[in-house]
Length: 152
Image 1 (cartoon, rainbow, N blue to C red):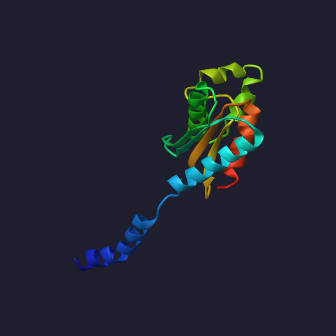
Image 2 (cartoon, rainbow, N blue to C red):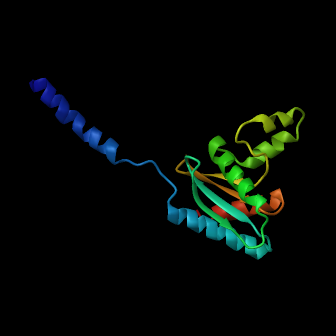
């Protein structure tokens, strides 16, 4: 009984510490700051965009559709954000892979949108979410995504 009590007293501080440590995450405030930066860059360039920010589980935190953008860009932006968070890499990686011989197989990968404009968001080396941009050319979408993450 005495050994059990000593073991409990020894382990308890470690259990308490384990319960109080949190994995980093993307807050609503973070998502809105990123979205605002994307919108500002889009406006500065004269591009109308759809801006989607997702959490690490691929759930949407924010979606902003600027005036005048085609509605088809909503699903594209969501797909880009989902690809970036699911595969932990920019969607441009998939776009580039499509350009090599045999690269068309990328099109068969579920949840892989092979168009630039989706980026994962990392904090302390851990994926916390993603951004997906659609509305202009894929290169322009990528420019806006990079500018948006510069504020994070």
